[in-house]
Image (cartoon, rainbow, N blue to C red):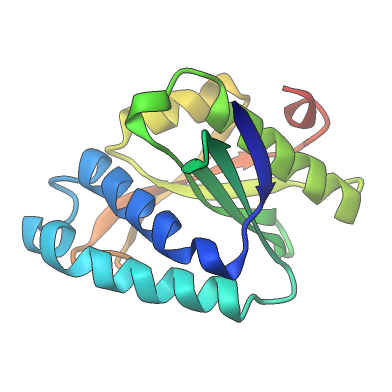
Length: 175
């Protein structure tokens, strides 16, 4: 059975492991093998421990569970940017359950939450340019690549990342 819920502090290890697996599958070549295979696990563990035990006031984290296992998660920051609106900072789904609508449902729940907070709200995220499957997914959901920039805020190398935006969340909230 598939369920969705708010994450709690005890979920940080499972979320961190899923996050690292996703990076290893999608960001090989963008980040070094050493970072992905050695450093990412401890780095993500600390990030998620902190995020879930000391959340910022505008943060919310949702998880998808199948048979008691976290198989997907989304982390967003409401109105994270005055121009672009809510930041969807993370959306990851285990490879073995991709294609079952989990990512689409998680992003829809994020859009619903953002609309509750601001009925005229917008949504944006950053995705690595080389992550073609994620780019295609966001485009199918109406996201628009507004810009591509060089960044070095995650990982251990400079990467090209795209800002994907949604001007209206009403349709996205009902996927």
